[in-house]
Image 1: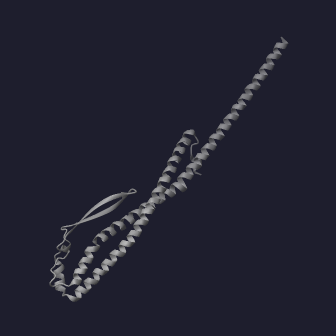
Image 2 (image 1 turned 45 degrees about the vertical axis):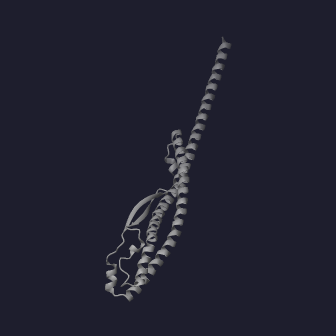
Length: 226
């Protein structure tokens, strides 16, 4: 038993009581953190599902338009049209702290604000299906970046939830019960020692009283003989 390895002194009892208070407070804070992380995690999971469906629908639409455009255009004209992109995208990364978890944040900027700059070709020799494919990909770019943010945030939060859960379980099932058991053990030992000390003192007192009584009787006997 762990309690038998504890030194049963008042100093150790005070230290264990402080440890128990800290453990109980930490347990509550970690449970609150775990619950809040779970709430935000579930919100992100729902957002992730919606974004994924939207992005996959956009990619399917773009692929469909690309297939139709490829069927109606020669491969050489298609490659030439897409060979030199006109627009450029600059990605900036940052982080935000959510419940001690660093969540990535992506922001992008385009070289120009003109929406027509996504088309790097003239419209004379290309089909409208190619325009639709390029427009579909441009439209889902913000959702793709947000989806990457959310998926990474879900991974990081899941890891933090698991880590917090293990800490909560360790406090709840190991540290707090063991500390309470040790406090009970030391308290019982101190009470037992105190009772033993009181019994010894009472015996010493009785012995002293008995010795004083015998001394009084002897003194009285000597006085009567004199």
